[in-house]
Picture (cartoon, rainbow, N blue to C red):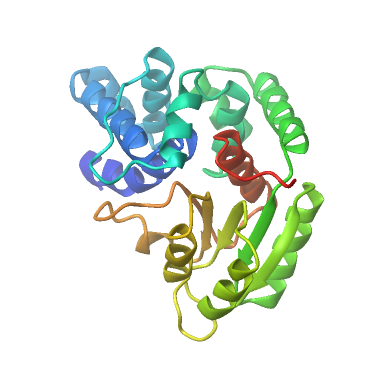
Length: 264
């Protein structure tokens, strides 16, 4: 596999990480572009990418750590969530959340994460522990789970409840999701793409977003269907089968950007 092919294969997942880190597709993509520009301008850096995925993320982390990019959102892309993301980014996503996203969402080992972040293993362990502790302190919100596999739905219910959030409803179809939302807008949505009756989780989420801004985490066995770069991509995308820590990290980052509605 050529270097270009290797980078291309990893690029959708780097973009996923950048979106989760920044809370914004436009800002995340801007950092990824800046990373690729830095690689093209530095032969030693370009050569290092042949060593694998870790070096690509290490290059991204160097760009992320060194500068904040002011990004103008495309026409029609602005939302309360994007605005909240930009407000939060003025303080930059803390190191502990970066460590948690790298070890959970991107499935790097502690050693690999340390290499990406220029930290030793014990420092990464400490950062991850701090991030998990932050999750436990997050403001509670109401969560809608859109999932047609009963065992997975139950697993997500237990996970979300264990974090101190309230389940406002579960749905296996688009129609059921509409019925739950008719009783009240959730503060967070966890959604599969393919639903029981052949309906789409994407359409179910569009119904919800038409009523107001709410963060959505897609949990799917088919991430390649959303990681195309040809359309707006979800900020938070978790691949099945998932680790519970991965879902917790995505929930934490969604709440970090302050666009979930807390329970009253």
